Amino acid sequence: MRSIWRGAISFGLVSIGVKLYSATEDHDIRFHQVHKTDGGRVKYRRVCSVDGEEVEYGDIAKGYELPDGQLVVLTDADFDELPLVTTREIEVLQFVDQEQIDPIHFEKTYYLEPDGVATRPYVLLRTALENAGQVAITKIAIRQRESLAALRVREGVLVLHTMRWPDEIRRPDFGFLDEDVAVRPQELAMAESLISTMAGDFDPTQFTDDYREAMTALLEAKQSGGEVRPAPEVADDGGGAVVDLMSALRRSVERAGGSTPAAESAAEEPAPTSPAKKAPATKAPAKRAAATKAPAKKAPAKKAAAGEKAGGTTADAPAKTTKRTPRARKTA
Image (cartoon, rainbow, N blue to C red):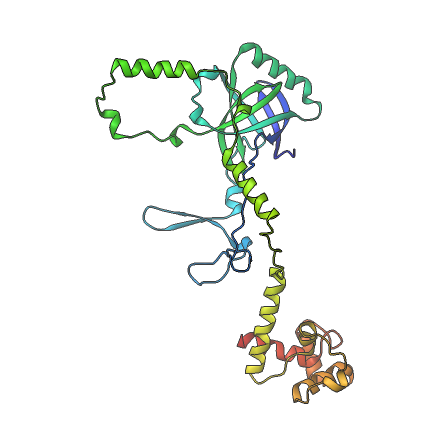
């Protein structure tokens, strides 16, 4: 297991260094959404509803809509300034009997491991809790969210249950609760007899996930029956985006009546096996070939100066390239 949080339990004047681990894991069979005709993965993009443009993850902030419809935008810097005093501390608030805590408050369960030399105070707190037969009510902040939590002992390990705040528990507002429903004594006696007959000690290993087992059997049957296909190979998203951008820029340059820069063409188009025979007879490739063979000799002084203003030298990029690139961006 890998720890997901590191801090200390504040127990009076005692500080116990601990590491936090998720105590549970999902064994659900996970599926990908695919195109049923070719098996290609279905992907979702973050698109702005205003301009229709795809938004980079780093440009996404959190927005809170006010009752009057106005929007408050918060950035990571705003969240960092919030006073979370329990960010690296599990503060013990009080000790209570576990029976007093309604399980509806429990949210997620974590294991706590002593960190470094904190084993002795860790064992001290564990033993004290066991002897008292109580659980500790604490506060902890995980992922910028502060929660109540119950700290108890299970199989020699301190276990932390994060809890819902009281205002997060919904009230069961159902109509039948206000009705006077009569239950006959005979029916009640029969129900109580059935409960007594089915009573036993809870052993979770006696129960199985029938749906997961059936799904596993279905997948194995399809695999053994040859109902499988190789996963389609797709180009990397980043590379595809670059090719699309370069293609759009090239079309924009051609539409404007210019020639494609030699450096960009070389990066996009595969080099022909026989340049002398396969070189097109059009004007633009001829200019590219000339610029590639002797850029230093044929670059005029004015064009070289333009290249230096753009942040490069004539050796780094041909003068014609630096001249044409702004036109391509402007047109695109």
